[in-house]
Image 1 (cartoon, one colour):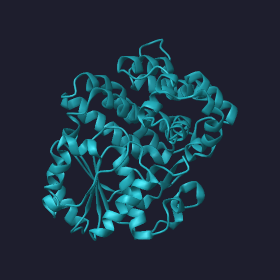
Image 2 (cartoon, rainbow, N blue to C red):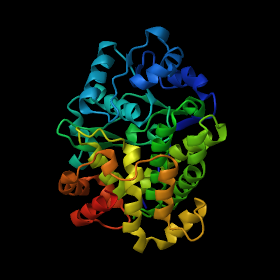
Image 3 (tube, rainbow, N blue to C red):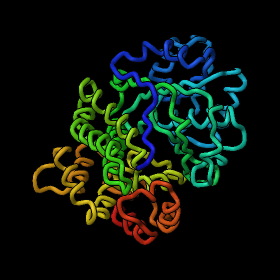
Image 4 (spheres, rainbow, N blue to C red):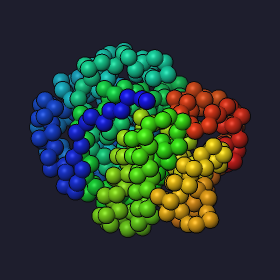
Amino acid sequence: MPLINYLTTIRFDFGAVAALAEDIAACGMKNPLLVTDKGVVATGIAARIAALMPMGGQTPIYDGTPSNPTEEATEEAVELYKAHDCDGIIALGGGSPMDLAKSAAILATHGGTLRDYVMIYGGMPKITTKIAPVIAIPTTSGTGSEVGRGAVMSFRDGRKLTVISPLMIPKRAICDPELTLGLPPYLTAATGMDALTHGIECFISNVENPPGGAIALEAARLAARNIETAVKDGANRSARYNMMMASMMGAMAFQKGLGSVHALSHTLGGIKEAKLHHGTLNAVLLPAVLRYNASIRQEEYARLAQEMAVPAGQSLDRFIENLNVRIGMPKNLSEMGVKREWFDSVAELSLEDHTSKTNARTPNAADYRAILDEAY
């Protein structure tokens, strides 16, 4: 049985950000850096959050987070952190700012390069309690990074790799569904499919963890039953609440492990010339991976179908394909601009991703090539 640790403090409700100053004080911060992106700044949310921070309008803000957070951007954030003698980080935005903030919290206090802390290169034991405290405030409902113990980062060599440690879980998470009310339909759909994929993959993974499985199943239920409403009616408070809960719970289930959807989407997302959105990749890859795992997960698929309200007689993979159409996701990888010439390399590199090891069925390079061909 793997170690189960959900020991972080979470505020979850409409208006929860009003308590930010209290959480900052509880974490001992006096001059935190605000890490976000230009999109969040443009909405005015960053200014609203900064006003609640100790330095108010003088708060140092790093807003250079790219859509796929990079090693270079992390180093820029660390330079700003040190220049302003910061003592913690407030991460505001989707998964990208939150992952970048967690990576910056390591580099600002540990030194070296980010690659030193990559999980598959033995980096986890190098991350110590010296890590800077992070408070995470999501503005999308997808990654659940506010309660996650990892950061998925794009490196200079084009690899997309994960830095993981239980010490990277933010000290506080503030989940305020109100911050997602203005999220555009396409971004709502793409991030929502990320949350749904987390629930599904964790539930069917090869790791035995009953509590994690129960949380994953509930995440899948909430996401499947609320994503369409959230996309069509972005002001629906119930749907926004449930999608943010699904996102958070999906990440709580990460200790059960993800699978081949994420192994492939991590690798594809690292291709610099493509700039592919992670949640959208998950949506497009999920049906093919579900078919790949179906032969050994029939019981789990039946349970998922029941909880996700899949129509009688419809397979789980077909349900996802139809859902993708209804919420405006691309039909295939080709439509996203993925090139078939990348497939051999992507298949090989995806096997090295840590999520490959917890897929329901053990894949090889030929399996991954076939999944990519099917999703193309």
